[in-house]
Image 1 (tube, helix red, strand yellow):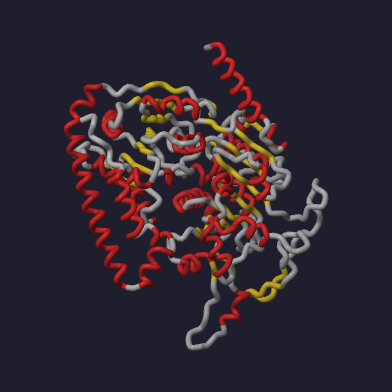
Image 2: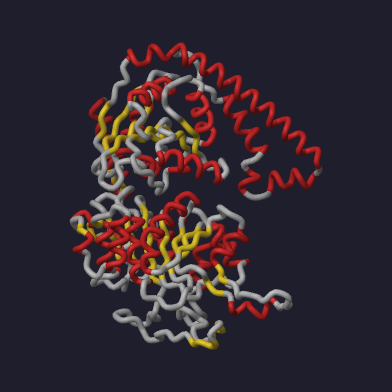
Length: 557
């Protein structure tokens, strides 16, 4: 009987392997260039690197380029000359942001007229802010300006930063239409989220992508998975004309303060590729978990793409990461988490949960444990941007040692000195696991990723890890001596959490009732408007109700 079961399992596994191998893979993805074979390169040996950029990098503490950075440099500034679009699949923390920022800044350093020539699109505001900081370390050195369009400030403030308007003399009436052609870009490089990018494309006078040369799609798999107001087809359409060439208005005269200046562009065919207009919109797409779905990649309209990857497997943990599992008693995960955090003695750590609800609930519970000598804060997507930015700043400076986070922080966020990542809830997919774990062990440094498990979760945990490279893991034991003193405090913390949640729920219900009496318009505003309203009274009442329903039991106390 057992022999038959084993044969059945082998046949089932063989069928799964056959099914996996039958998934179509685009020809250009089958034989990637392995960037791990490229050694790190000191800045003074990087070919053709502008001396001002070298100085700017050294001033920020960078002395050499990582393998993925040098690989992209060779294909853009070096022999590759950016004749092919570049696709990068490289582990978290390998230096992908600088990999595209540096060659773009170098290529634009000789520009004479200021237009938006490079666009970097990212899925979240926090990630966009971080990428802009990277550009800001090098772009000013060669006279380039970097803009931000993420909805962090009002759209009027963003327009003032992005568009240069003509100076008007006081006391004279002007027709705004007379100056529509004189509006010019104030930035050379724009870092944007899709929603706010579409706002400017549709509504901002003087905002144009006509002169766009470089498009970077960072965290590509997420941006392709969600429509985001059809931003990608819109951008691609705006950079081509009806006859297929870029810059459809290149022959127009542009009025400026210095008279009429004609923009001259090459209209010949691109070297090496028959029938392609020159100049073309050059693209770079990057992710630690780049999709292989042909239908999704086709949306990008890639031009003879070149695939750069680390290792042979699609999913990869950083080499310096230590994977650890912690087996917990039933219903006692918070107890094990507190003991684990205490053993870390204030090291920077991020605790990931499965949802916004769990994040709020767990952070509140940890704070009710009393004086742990650890500053713990919450970080999730429903918080206002100002609160998230403030929390992230405190975490970067060390004022906050532990962040309890939803998956809002999984993608690309780079906080120096994060030593530990803790999966309070097991990630549902290997992609999520890779991105969570990647908040530590960045830039070649060491880091640890703990996953708290019940016995019945261990099998699924192993199955997830089998899909990744560098997936060796060990068991970490939390000793009974560290747990026993916490049990009475845990019981008290649970009681305080339940009381706090009930109090918050009552207040928000009351606030919701008051809002409903104001009139139908007010209620409509709360339910149908943008994110800041959707995360308001109505959602918070539902959130707190779910918190009560999901409070941890005290069976282990």
